[in-house]
Amino acid sequence: MRRKAGAALFLGFVLACAGCGSRHEAVAGEDPVVRPAITGRLPHDVNAFTQGLLMDGEVWLESTGQYGKSDLREVDVRTGEVLRKVPLDRRHFGEGLALWKNRLYQLTWRERVCIVYDRETFKEIERFRYSGEGWGLTNNERHLFMSDGSATIRVKDPNTFRELRRFEVRGAQGPVTRLNELEWIDGEIWANIFQTKFIVRFDPSNGRVLGFIDLRHLPPEEDRHPGEDVLNGIAVDPANGDIWVTGKYWKALYRLDWPPGE
Image (cartoon, rainbow, N blue to C red):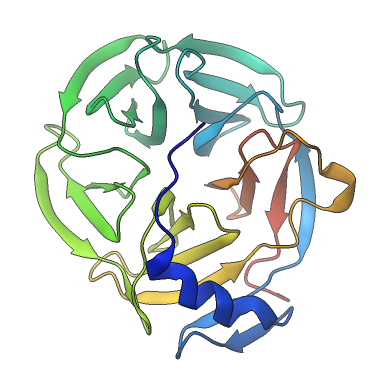
């Protein structure tokens, strides 16, 4: 099973959030915590160990993990049917995924390889090497943003994968570690915090924490099953701004009421 990172640096935040309310409270110092309602549900393949997720039109683009089972896949949004997929080499563990222009970038965990595909054909175009581990990946119009399981975000040139700068994600209690799957949303970056049901929102210009999202109410009781794993997977619908989340081996994706109550 997937890595088991140390929890010490984040334990204080989790304990502080133990009594969070359903709306909006300042806990963990001054960092706000919100627990949004769920306003929609779509099916998800329970065999998908979700590592990277994004929406492109009427399909999900998803990177899945586990050695010998990792792939890049295109999935029908409404039915959850896998329309096509490209398996990774059995020695590669799939990780974060980003779409920039007409290129899909898929990280690998410990193999230090980013595989680049043509979006339309799913054919591999090239590969880039990087140091350390690959966890999450997202982008704006100019740059790629990559997590490696620490509190550090690396900013990459999508043409060369050269590192341009890096910054640390910090909140009121200090660095926020175990940053996993990433999504660019309205000028912010949202990141799953591995082995928790919290998402952190931060400013991509300096790493300042903007708030936390508490998703401990997911999945709902009717969707729970013994094989499910951790929360992981954030995708925004570019057509209307809806935000969807899921987890590894989860039965469904859930639309968040965001901003809450609007």
